[in-house]
Image 1 (spheres, rainbow, N blue to C red):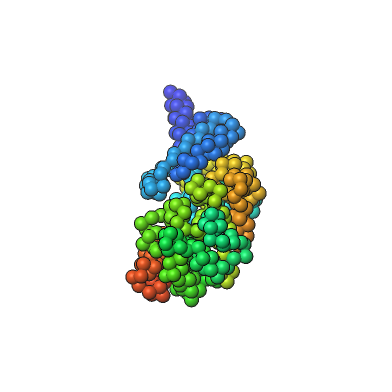
Image 2 (cartoon, rainbow, N blue to C red; image 1 turned 90 degrees about the vertical axis):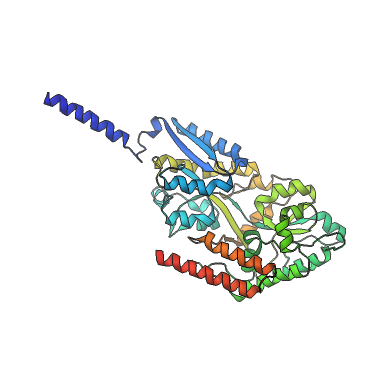
Length: 420
């Protein structure tokens, strides 16, 4: 009787241990395992489906389920699920949030996986590798990127007899062309001084030799003379009415102003190319951003990250690699959606809109600068956007606004350092 009881207890213990397997993937490949992935843009559904089919074929018994959550709800839903011990195994991450999710322990440090396999991360765009590295560890594998170029309307240039922008253009050339292309009677502007950090003033500050945040994430550069000078140039373009006012940009989205042929030039993100081409067709042209004291353009992009509490970390890691490998890069390029982060796979994207020089964006990566982030990016960007918009609307001097941004930003950065 006692021997039978020992056997029963032993069997029960084995069942309990199997049920509590947690992160052990030893049986995943041969059993029924479901991985969950999360993202927000259904425009990539075909690409995601093709990558999943490839992964499932290479990993029999594993099913990948996808949840698309609209951008407006994505981050709130994600944080709520992760905080409750749930959430997808693998999901999209952007630059402004990476440090916060990494420092909060919500996503897994993937550097040990990279080191164990000696995975070559140099295959990814350098700016994105830097962007998704936190405290010397990578937390995301880049999937696609975007950078900034100068979109222009060829027809409006032709009508005004103005030469198209070239790679040699400077701010002076841009200003001169904007003046010639501005026609008050037609309600036509030469340029849109875009009130956007990523597509607008970040680039101007960098081109003027300034910086947004120091490399060690401890100091704001928004109160520097270089930043003020860059913002004053933007203010001049507004004051001269070469650009629609900030109030006009609030009332009518700049893409719509440009797409309705009311402006000749617009600095904007590469991912907007298909949308702008749909509006302007063959009248659309693209050139590099004009240089200030130097050439510079913001580079951003998304990565796949792993839920820190996933029960299937080995399979999740395999999936991350599959979603970001060379074949995934080629599929991304062929879709025309955006520039793949995997170097050397961008040819199909460059050719995705015949007659449009998309190579401009690839060449721009040579002087690209990673999107500026820290642990509390959203907090200091709220201050930045509020104060800068107020100044550009004429409610306060630019120098006072930038000093407020610098002070608020430095206070937040100091708190981040104190919490470490």
